[in-house]
Length: 156
Image (cartoon, rainbow, N blue to C red):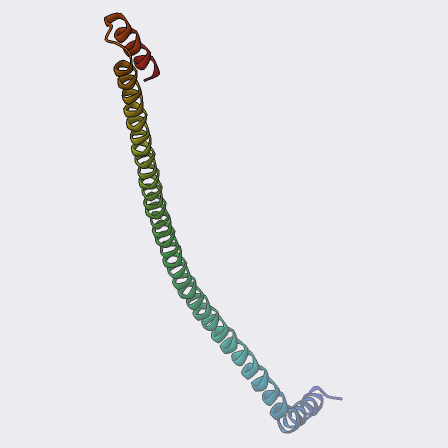
């Protein structure tokens, strides 16, 4: 076979192959490639959207943490202020009770002191009266008077 016939047969076979590929394989192959390209684009878009959602979630988390920290600081400050108020109230209450107790003790001591003074006055008056009675009953004698007065002084 001459070369030109072989070349023409190969060219016809090649043309038939190209027509067959174009008619039956090219459309489905391009559709498959387009679907794959679309899935890749959708995956990249979803990844980008996920990245943006993650960034937004992190930003919201930081805001929530900042708000929570501020609120915790406010609660701690309020608790410390309240504790100081309670301590101050307790001190004032204790001080007032101590002053009341001290005033009561002073009043009781003053009453007891007054009672003892009155008792002492009554005893002194009785002793003086007893000494005067003894002096008057006996005759007037200087040594006897001094001795009686010494006895009265010892009793006081």
